[in-house]
Structures are given as C-alpha cells and as structure tokens.
Length: 151
Image 1 (cartoon, one colour):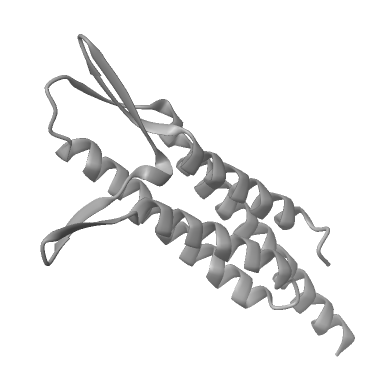
Image 2: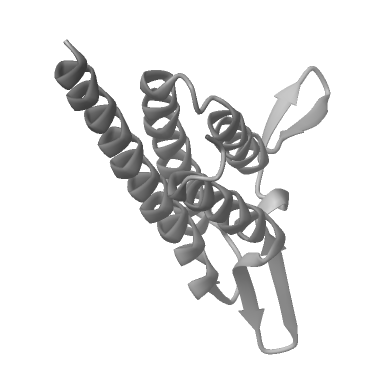
C-alpha cells in the first residue's frame, strides 16, 4: 500500500533534498563583498579542449537520490528493492555532502569561506531514509511471519 509510514519518510527525504539544492550551502564573506553558492550551483570545472566545462556534481548526485526515493515510493510491492534503493540513496547523499565539503575546503578566495548550517538538510534526509528502511524491513518481517502462520 502506498499510504504506509515509510512513504511519508521517503517523501520527507525528497523535500529535505530539494531544500538542500535550493538554499545556499557555502558563503564567501570579505570586507566589501559577500557571495553565496546554492546547492545546485556547486560544480567542478573541467577543461575540455580550450573551453572550461562545468559539471554540476552536487545537482546530479542529489537529484539522483531524490529520484531514487521517488521511485522507491511507488515500488511498495517490491520491498527488497525498496530497501536496496534506500541504501543507494544514502550513498548518493553522503557522496553529495562529501563533495560540498570538498568544495568548501578548496575554495580559494581573499576572505572567509563559511559553511552554512543548511548543510544539515542532507543529514536530515539520511535520517528519513534510514527510518524508511527500518519500516520497510518491519513490513517485510510481518509478511514473512504471516506466511509462516498460513503454512
């Protein structure tokens, strides 16, 4: 059924990941200058030929995690696959947060580079994914116990 508690947790994880992309994650502060970098703007510049090419790794990782959570909501009949998607989503979120910390540490600027508290939204999304995993596993154990009673 789609109206289970793990659906709510997966939906809340999607909301937290969306906010993680929307809000500024890194702020650069100088005496006469202040700039913020939103989650979807965090990327890495690679030279391709003569032109720099920006790959938005954070957007790719977080959008993939949100997409996997959305897919997991509709796979309510395949609980093992749902649990596997929860773990893949957690890995993608941790990788995205690691990329944010990497960009924070390597930001070269004449001023202070501040990591915002909104980075905790990724931790909130991980907690929701773990809660969804726990309740999916509870459902699986309940169905296995009912199958044993029928036999």
